Length: 265
Image 1 (spheres, rainbow, N blue to C red):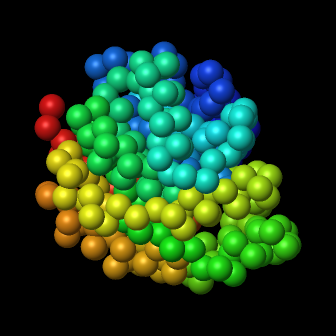
Image 2: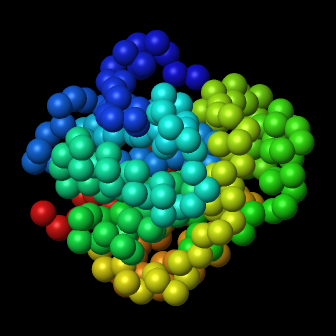
């Protein structure tokens, strides 16, 4: 868990209907801005380590998608609708040089942004995601019938067997707190998502981050995307599962920092 002093170093704000945290405020107009987009049923605090630790390399912002965390409004069940909400946030806050960085559902949103609004972004980061995200029917049924069981499955399925489940469980619970109907919409959005035929349209520099022990979006998903996106770079986080930013925050942060260093000025 993070200490209170870490919390106090981050700026928690509301933009229109969306809540977000930032490593510093106001943002530096001369620096790129990492815009972190969480996965299904999660919230902005999933990215706490990245927002705090990467502030030396870029502006850092992590948003609550509609219906999540401190954001108002309804959750959504289509990735394109979430992507439009992210674009509105960037426009309202005049985010300088935005680099979307999304995990799972957030990665799908990032793909949607890069395919349909690519000229707006100097780069993008795809983490533990895929160009098509078919959801196990067990997950959809469990959300509707036993939400507590679903939340526990996020722990058991989301992390590597090499990770300390007891240590991570409170953190995963904290960053996965949303209404069951919002979680269901998120996973339905994933289940409908398919941009396999659009990957070739991405022309911006992309980092594909995979996790060696990810059973929800296996490494092969990342390798497929990297093979279809011109010039994409791939980096695997070892001994981590789907929730690698929580399991191996320093390794994830180092990979992102290295990617930023290699971007053209």
